[in-house]
Image (cartoon, rainbow, N blue to C red; front, top):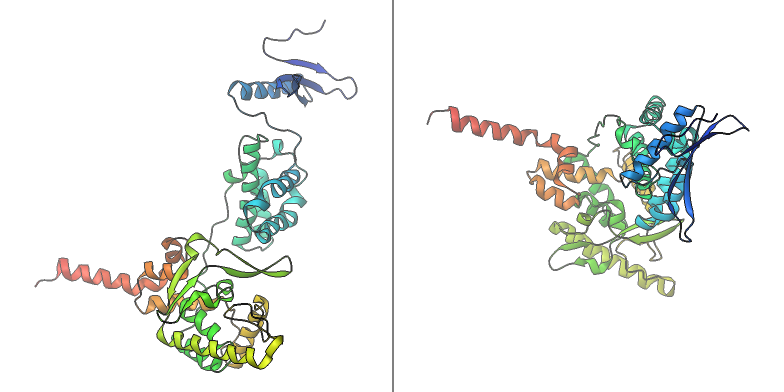
Length: 381
């Protein structure tokens, strides 16, 4: 005699083909008025009943019923195709997807979301740390998985984000290598008269990002006020050079230039005008401040190679062009420029970011504050 179902239990039966217990419950109606049923399966009747009760509890609470068939890989691919590529630049979206393919799919890609646990994510993170990947790379892997699962929650595929519940590896922020004022002056002497002298001097004196500097156009430069407007960045995307918005909203900013830098830019404009005249019809007027020998935008990769060569020839060793940005910030802080101002010049998203990266340079200022309070509170007279 078949066991009678309890009230609200749904339909439970044992499938003859494989012996699994199957539970079904009505979860609503489709657009044509047909009943939609949710099916669960388990090895025992009690397990099937427990799964069915979870479904019913979500329905009673007004929550979407989890999609038990969706895998991690299917989620990320759908997230990329339907959401991500419309929210961020294609280069960023492709980078997210590439990281998922390389680091997430091999171990978690075929796993169903409904079975994904915090422990699964913790093991993935641990394996990447043990494999020698940097903390920033491992945190990026976790972040991408967490963002995809956030979208899964919005779609009703899962009801919690196990990636955000996992523990990321501790972040050890790198202070970044910086040039001393003496090394910076050596670099300026080395590029004196170089075709791209103004470019390197500008990045060193203002801390502009490489893409921001290469994205500058002459309309952004006010030679009378000595102010430069940072409006865009130049980057390689899909094999071609394109311009896009700055990295963040605060990256869109105005930068006051040192007077020697204003003079250097004026000389650069005169040199560029002579190049255009000498080349004649072959010159391509792109409007950018820093261009190739025929007037087209400069490839960021070529700039990197050129800068490394210049530094080696000058006896400075091997330097990355991004270290000009670190150097600019460090020198400004060492010269007593307030942290808030340095943050605005760099276009950081927040002053906290500036403090986290360059706070060690402020140690003398902190000691000066302590000394001042000591004199005010404990010294007579």
